[in-house]
Amino acid sequence: MKLTQLLIVPFLLFGTFLSAQEEPENLYPKSIISVGPGVGPNYGIFGVKTVTGYKNSGLLLSVGTLDGFTTFTVGGQVAVKWWYLSVGYGSYGLHIIGNGQNETRELMKGVIAMTGGMINLGKAKRFFIDTGVGFSTGYEVEGNIFIDDRVETAFSIALGVGYRIGG
Image (cartoon, rainbow, N blue to C red; front, side, top):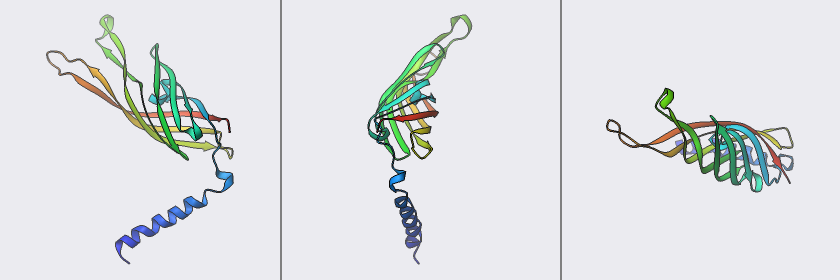
């Protein structure tokens, strides 16, 4: 057998396995809203994430808190079965300038991109665990005589639980 044939066979078997998973009892609820608490940029740092749209795809809104600040994320999410990709704008960290009494704190806001999985709990697939990884960028830090201006980028993780409403 040629090398390409050896590489194609596992993909065909895996594809057959995935198509077998499409039995009616494995279908996802046709929910229009999913909501749940969690930690990460998708959740407004420490907060609640909601996705309004068909089967976990649609408008993503979250509100949360970090060190006394109210945080948020606004964006969109696309989900295919358990996997999702979300892109939005919001809070992704805290920038501290100085120390002690001269300390200034600002929320870092910018573009947030996350991908992850929604691990279903139970046959009804209403409850799920939401895990994700991603990055955030866009917060501009002003330099000084010794340091150039720069844009802060952060790699992130997210963890939450959720419930699918409707359908």
